[in-house]
Amino acid sequence: MKAALFDLDGVVFDTEPQYSIFWGAQCREFHPEHPGLEHEIKGQTLVQIYDAWFSGPLADKQALITERLNEYEQQMSYDYLAGFEQYILGLRAQGVKTAVVTSSNQPKMEAVYKSHPEFKTLFDAILTSEDFERSKPDPDCYLKAAERFGVEPKDCVVFEDSFNGLKSGRAAGMYVVGLATTNPAEAIKPYCDEVINDYVDRK
Image 1 (cartoon, rainbow, N blue to C red):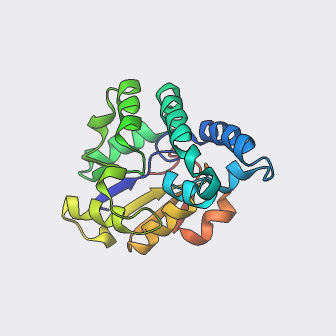
Image 2 (image 1 turned 60 degrees about the vertical axis):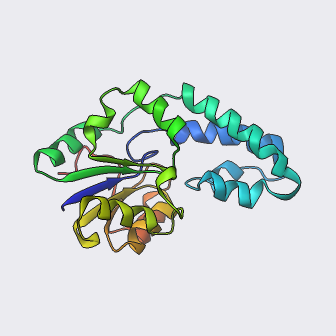
């Protein structure tokens, strides 16, 4: 491993339950006919959610939902997954390059930096939605991260929790570690090379 590439929510931070609460409220308001929709859209980008569920007659609600989401993310708790800090520090001590590769935007990242002033010191690069032309499951974001470090995709390990993210890492030709934080281990197993619950037991 020359580079370790981490998604953010559900991979670095245990934030997915908070997003389920937010999207549960939006879905009950705008899609009461579809109970449990917040679980179906887990791991999808905002654009993908809007295209699938908030287009047409609901297109004019996108700005309102985005405003609500931005406010919500400023107040969220950003707690590291168990063992993450020790694990990434161990990688860096071994000379492994580290990057966040997330569909989150800069306003969200500013909230992360405010909550964790040390965050930027854990990574050699932080790539956000502003850095990509195509969203996961397209491999564009992970290939850009490998290019940033000047390493081959085969020498990169991707850490992901969502189906789109896992497919993105696989499509990039990288070793994929799936975290069973958002979806059950048996559900993500076909899309990755290894499944873990957190970083406590991974060496």
